[in-house]
Length: 81
Image (cartoon, rainbow, N blue to C red; front, top):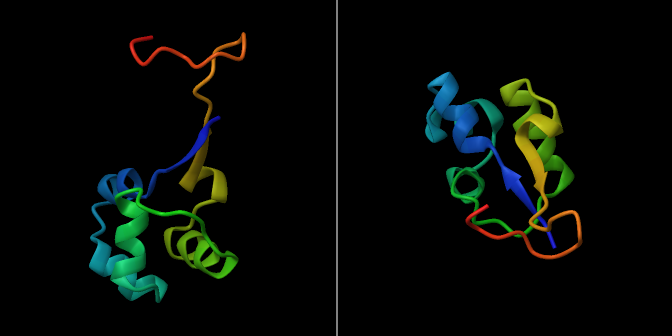
């Protein structure tokens, strides 16, 4: 089984935008932003996703990525490569 990785921390770092500034421009709470920043989230609703994309001027695929942790045979990939 794979996982969905959130690139919010990388995007904010590259743009030198603080979580507080993102809260101001997006209308999202700092609590919500912090969950995604630290990848401590379980799901996302459409309204939150729209606010992230609109505020950061990104597409969904820029913000989230599917990471498969299985190799071509269907077995779990080794963490050491």
